Image 1 (cartoon, rainbow, N blue to C red):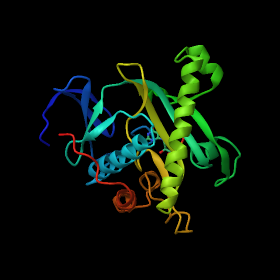
Image 2 (cartoon, rainbow, N blue to C red; image 1 turned 30 degrees about the vertical axis):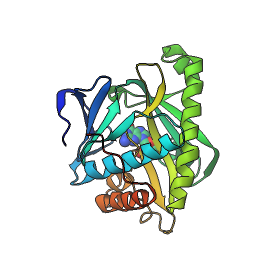
Image 3 (cartoon, rainbow, N blue to C red; image 1 turned 60 degrees about the vertical axis):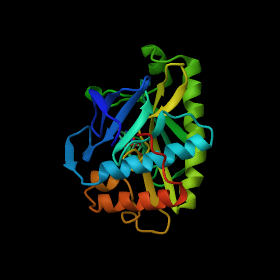
Image 4 (tube, rainbow, N blue to C red; image 1 turned 60 degrees about the horizontal axis):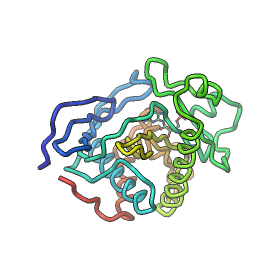
Length: 250
Ligand code: 5GP
């Protein structure tokens, strides 16, 4: 990395955020740490940071080309990304195309049910509370965001799905569901922030019918299926093949 970083501003489970000498920008370092179940399960996975940084960069550039605003500015080395400084909204936005995961644990919906239109769930981003599901009435009660912002968040998440789902399908991957984090930049513009990677998306190999072998995302780690990095590498290979080399911002 040629760009130098300043102070550590924040350390999350999978990334570190550093100050940057450039106004309104910060540096994100993707770590090799893997965590699941609110960090009760932890491991170090060589190459995960590099793969997620690369995959996210390609996907952010794809969104950008489709006119979807993101915090991404460019890569700055294998595991580093330059992004706009944003105020992250403390809400996790989950879009589901296929029922699985917590939706099937918490409702009687059968695994694999196609959700059309995709189901949008909002969760309050708070590790101590275990990221609880937010109903519309709880959202209003907590006064976290305005009704207008709620609509803007939903519209943005659905636009992301409308771009990513067909993109992944063209790489023989099914986008089962994904989590987005959104933020507001200095101009008050709503942007896709954080990362978009196999850590935050469920991706199934469409060429494979076996219900475990087709999993190419963090569920391999959550469920102890092995081959986590091989799966992330496969996603990276397919995504990279369809996206030009991400731009360098260092
Ligand atoms: P579920 O609610 O079924 O556990 O997750 C739905 C989708 O959102 C999955 O793609 C999952 O990876 C993602 N997701 C939900 N919460 C988190 C989280 O706290 N961290 C990460 N990395 N992904 C999450």
